[in-house]
Length: 163
View (spheres, rainbow, N blue to C red):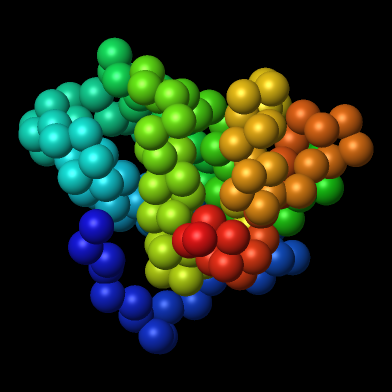
């Protein structure tokens, strides 16, 4: 995956900034992250960029793609719920037709690499089923009290997801 150049002068909203600042940041980042996700999917699944662009969509702070091989739904800097900080990327849906082939780990690795570019410090896996929970635990995410949502600090994931 070719990484975008980090602009050292780029600033990110402060954790206490209002929704307008975070929504503007999400809007600004969405198309760039969409391009990065397109590159990852093309490399990983050997699909043409055209095929991916036809299936990859997003509105507001969301990105989603569903094909016969994968189903992904991401939220960029979503409004705080469950006490989560705004500077996060949430994996709301993750699924791959071929299980236990490294697709999920590769996706998390790509998202961790992109974190400094876009300013998210935490990755959440939301409403995880048993399979997603086992996956999250293997990669070093920590569960909430109900073990439904999993939190991964980017710096911790950088160490655990790249083993």
